[in-house]
Length: 181
Image (cartoon, rainbow, N blue to C red):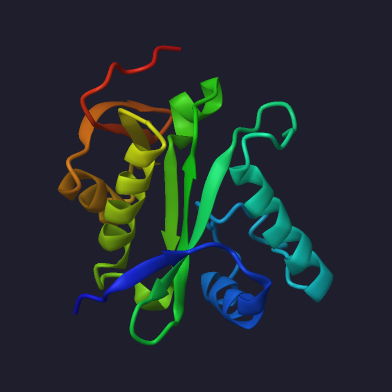
């Protein structure tokens, strides 16, 4: 089964869908969501409003960010037919040393109940197009060494494995010069 998806900006209007999606992760890591602690995600009305505002502000290159943070385009993955929220994907506009070694340009998570349905592949394809529009070339994408599903998604998208660092497989997509540490 393959789903048709679209990527939408975070929105307070989708708070109920956001909360349902986050609950599906049951406290596990939610890459690409901007949630710092999956054990304590923003769930109160005020927290969700602040969370959404922060994700949207990170896109704006004029927004001053804390030390070590980079501008980022956050999107929520939704089913194009049912409008169900399926996960999160984020494109970081540049790399820090940490992102070069561990996080990459694009991070994503698909809610457990929607995995193995083509959601991650479709979302990554759209995010790669958006990265191109941001003049990010090449794009670095990482995944845990034991995450075979994500590994397959990245390789299917054309990812070329550079190496493995601290349990993270590091893949490049694109023809541009690769940044060095």
